[in-house]
Length: 194
Picture 1: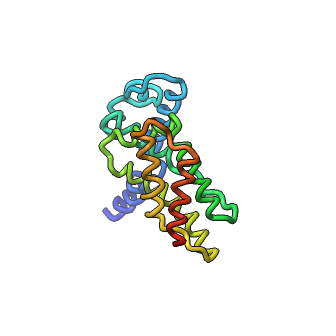
Picture 2 (picture 1 turned 90 degrees about the vertical axis):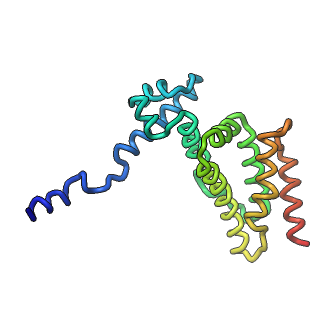
């Protein structure tokens, strides 16, 4: 009996498998979505399943709906690859990063990702995207603090720069250009000095 217990403890089924079957399926499905988008093909669960080499029921079991799958794909795509550049001038870095952020989010692929994130009934995905943005701003802010400066709080930047930019992207007739973003940043910085 004791020997059987030791064998069971060492069996592969008893050990967690990082990068196991679930991770491989997710990677294949996400890759299939990316490939179908690039090819300009219609995104349907059967088409994605065929391209990924899984059954449609596998996708429905894991994600429930196409909207939830596309939301997860968008969140993955919106995750930053690297920290913001550091020029040594946090004000210029902040302005440059926010202008680039607005430009990317206002682009057609950016708008599509925002729509995909918001189309699903997954508040945690929208929160993850907000957290990614906040983390990037935190990096710039921490660099400023390390140099003895007093940058605005990340929450202030989110409320007074990021939020109006996203609002204009989603509901405005005109996209928020660099001049608009620079004006928002200048106003926040000016208020912080007063």
